[in-house]
Structure formats: C-alpha cells, structure tokens
Image (cartoon, one colour):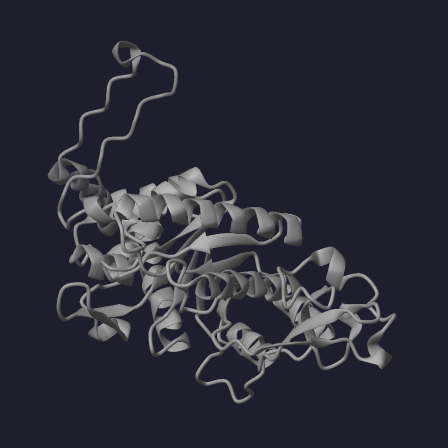
Length: 390
C-alpha cells in the first residue's frame, strides 16, 4: 500500500487545529500526515494543591511530560510517573503546544486519525546538539523524548529526527558516540510507548551534519527498533545527484527497504543546489530532482510506502505526487493487459486450430476453396431457367 500526505497542516485548511488538518487531509484524498513539533515551550514547577491526588494525564489544559521529586527538575519522561497520582511537593514539567492543549485533546485527535485512516507520524524539533555543552546535550535528548510522549498520545507510529552536527574530533568517533546516544533513546522509546512508537533517523543534506546514506543505514543496523527515513531531497543535495538513473534509484530504494522493518518512510520535495552542502527545498516542479522516475519505480513493485511532501506547497505537491504515481500505475496496468493487435485490412485471417487432442497428421484435410466464378454459375443458370419457365 502507498500513502501520500503533507509534512504539516495543509495550507488550504481553513482551521488551524491538528484535527482540522487531519480532516482536510482526508477530504483531499490523502492518507498520511507528518505532524510538526517544532517549537518547544517547557515549564517545570511544583504541583499545585488542587492537583495533588489527580493523574497527570487528567489535568485539564496541560500537557504533563514529567513528574517526580521536587529536585528532579524535568527529568526523563516516565509512563508510570505521568500515569500515577500526583503527590504533594512533586515537580511537574509541562509543554505548551499549539496543536494540542492536554491529553484528552491528544486522544480525540488519535481517534479521528484512526477513523479517517490517516497514518500519523511526528517530527521532533529540528535543532539538536549532542556534542556541545552538557546542557545542550540534555536539552536535545529531552526534546526528542518529549516528541515521543506526544507521538504516543497521538497514536503516531514514528518520531522522526535529525542528529545534529558531528563532534570536533574524528567523525568515526562521532558516529560511535551517536550510536550510544540513539541506543539509549531507542530503549527509552520502547519502554515508554511499549513498542508502539519507533525512532526514525533522517539523513542530512549538509556534509557537516550527521546523516549520509551510509551513516543512516549503518546506524539503524546497529541500533534495534530504529527506522531509516529516505529523504530523497537531502540525499540528492549530499551526493550531488538528481537520481535520474533508474538503476541508481532502484539501488537506493532497495537499500532503505531492506533496512526498514515495516513500511518504508519516504520524504520528498524539490531541491536546488548552490554550493558544497548547501541546498534549498522548492516545489517539486521547480526542483532539480523529479518525482517521475520514483513514481515509475514505485508502480513497478509492490512496495509498502508512506510518501510525505516536505515541499513548500505541502498538500498540493502531495496530491501532485499521488497523481504521477497513479499515472505510472495506469501505464503499467495498460501494458500488462494490452489488447491483441488488430488485423490489417486485406490481411488473411489466422488459420483456426484443429480439433483439440487430435494430432496434426490425423486432422481432416481442408476442403479446397471453390473459385468465385464457378460458385456463381449454378445460381446464374438457375435464375435463367426460372426466367424461361415464366
């Protein structure tokens, strides 16, 4: 099955809530959406007297992501902690997010997405720094975990993230350290969501940021329960190619399919190259990478893929990609079920086969064709005799 959808609420959506966006995606004939968790506004405070004894998930107008002793100051989110009654002097960490105000809000959005068959995923904040200060590293870890909390509440199956810049030393050391960081994150995701949300690693188009094709595939091979994201625009910028060669494109898709345990997650948009490692995302029709070759490849194989449009035109290019795929699928179907060629005028008809099960040597001999003139004589004579009899 192949799904198409935008990376965010559709531009044409009249309402700006997340549920409005999911409903609009459905009305446009799309079946996927990548929710954008970009701006993070955390707040850590002591529990209020009226909150004591209540479950953190039940607090109205609040998205509680962490509860603990007063000195924990926003530690890692714990499913047990936010599902247990709040105690006096507990420290409560909350998020302010424009797309959902509390857990009942998340639950209603989750139910709507399932009712409309919308495959939901969530993108974590884009800026992360695991090789800066200890505070920057902890903040980056928390942002990805908070994204996982929201993804679990929404019923999203993936939390997509970049991994930031390399460290100042050898890149191989950076890759090894990032492997340890992602392993800890993946273990936390598995425990918090009970296996329903997985961490998806996205490649980068900039050579100074972790995320080449080889690095992403190697990382998901090392770390269990992680998924690679095939972002064709980023890889095109990183590798300085437009993936027009069908063999090259097929090899790329095959590598990511083999590294993915489940549906392939594919992100596409137009892209323009400027200098080494610099690029800009554009509408598909203006970019240097076309979707047509990919549509042909997807139509020739029975892939299970979710295609997300990260183009500035969002849902418009998602629908355009769906149209290109459906055209490629129609051409494939027409080719497989083509009607037999029509017989040219004046060409002899094909000889009919003999009786079934009888060898050709024992088939009855065909009666020779009677000349047209001879065939006409008896009738002509009969007509003349009839006229004489009158």
